Image (cartoon, rainbow, N blue to C red):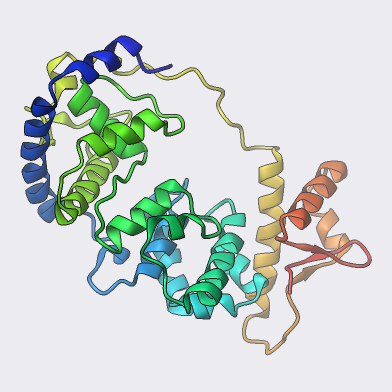
Length: 323
């Protein structure tokens, strides 16, 4: 469901001073709320490097943060710097990614590490445009690193932040989808003037959207902005209305088959751990064929994994992690 044009025009006509007053009060509420309610995620702790924050943002793409925590802890213990990750083998990187999903992200993160080492002497750049040029780094990740790692005044715009801004400031529901230029412009309009306040704002609004002002079960009774929220005051227009979109299936899909192949290789890697072997984990053609009944689909998925450099097809029809 598209966002209503009439409501958008009304928000544009609203005097900026009203939004400014609302933003100022909201900031102070969020500052207090954040100090008492923010989840204790390891990458939020004092001393986390900018690289560690980037890793957390890449891992959290399309993955709930709470699922990321054990993977992030293990990853940063093994490869705490871009230099360390740049020297790892592809097999090690894909294995460590585990079941985070979309494993191509792991290899892109390693590509990013190599660029940081080669171009920036192993130090993650501060400049937004430089961050945006790194492999696997899009607008959201670049802005998140600029704000959370380097305390720069930049609007961070994810699904949670868009939802809170839409509800509190524009009095309407946000139905997700891709972030638009209008979403980014609106986020910039309400962003505090100082870099330090912008950091508090970005952190607070994102956490509020993730834990309280959620898409399906907003807990307005405990929201620090409940008496300021224009969506609540308007009677929750659009509440419970779901956008028309096809539900993505999992069982029997190519994504499932790709995951089965990678998980089998990860199991091999775990079995080889400590055996003092330099051989990358491999599946014989017989082991591979036993993974999935539909041979044609299996081979299609293996070819796609090979194209993505997540596996190598070996002589004889087996597969292994790339060296």
